[in-house]
Length: 337
Image: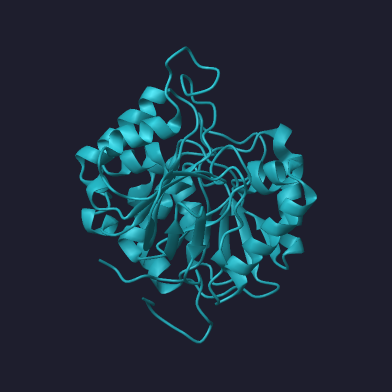
């Protein structure tokens, strides 16, 4: 397996490009995109919009044909001026161009790729093929320009500082800022590499030639969340992870805030399970800590969950700590373990 590959630390004035790596930009959300640009500029970065990020441009449900998106993505990966790439939104396209990604360009000049949802596929596949840390963070338009703008001012300030530190500091962040929503679903402690994303994407990628080998999950802390569909679908995705052997290898689990899942918990028909009940049902007697309702995913402004970084989890104390930096100093070259 590739060693962990950290991109070099960003500095003030570095160029961050916002790109359509999956879904299109609808004209109604252009103001949110402008807000996202403003957030990144406050962090001290220059910001550019990639050409495919043009309101009204689309192909079916995507910003363009998968090959066009891949071509633009690869050009950004090869451009030495571009120091980070942030996805404008999620969508349903990344599966269409996994086989077109220039992995050699990533190895030659690793840079942060930021986003979640459909971008989870990119993080997982690129992490497997190159060892690159995956920056599972908010998306630009619905996140920085959307959820962040309706959050309390103090929370916005905390997130800006957290994201800036993630990209510009070679020191470990330590404990992520917890809130009263965090729940201990099964007590215990674990320390391991953070691996995860949207649960349907985790299950889908394992059905492709780009599947993560089971060894990638040995001692890992699995994080996941889901939006839409049915509670039974979540149960089924977890069963896929059980049958594949993933749940037998992980050391801990962190579950994000669910969104728009029918038949789940409160407001659902009598007897409907909570997400906690679904998780514990599938885990059975596996004695691993589970921390639930953590702020990442489609329902909330996202805490960063960098794929590949070692974390410390204490479910009883409701803490999750990033034990390593996600970026490396400029002077260092090559893979970093």
